[in-house]
Length: 110
Image (tube, rainbow, N blue to C red; front, side, top):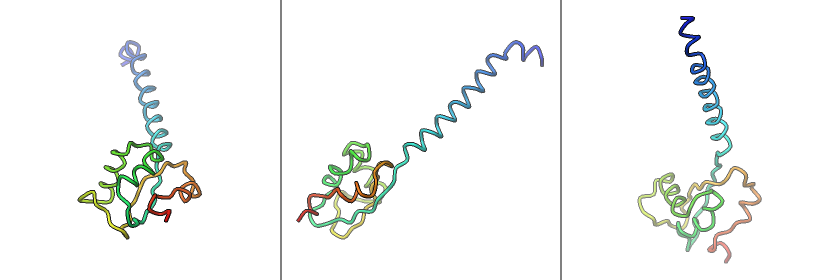
């Protein structure tokens, strides 16, 4: 056993350090990139594309990725949404409530 340790100690220590460093990166990165979610009530004239135009950048997604995420998370069977529907949308963790509340969809500016 001691000859095995002497022969491969560098490799074993390198593997252990690499494993711990990898786990550290996985847990710290996932904690920093967590998103928060917000409920949005659909108004007359809203569409998934209009919502994506407003919120996709703030969720760090392309408009297509945003629409796919919203459709999947809200179990939408089609791209049609109707007034009164409520959708969950992702937001960056850094967005404060006041920043979110100041953003309005085009249909909300009547």
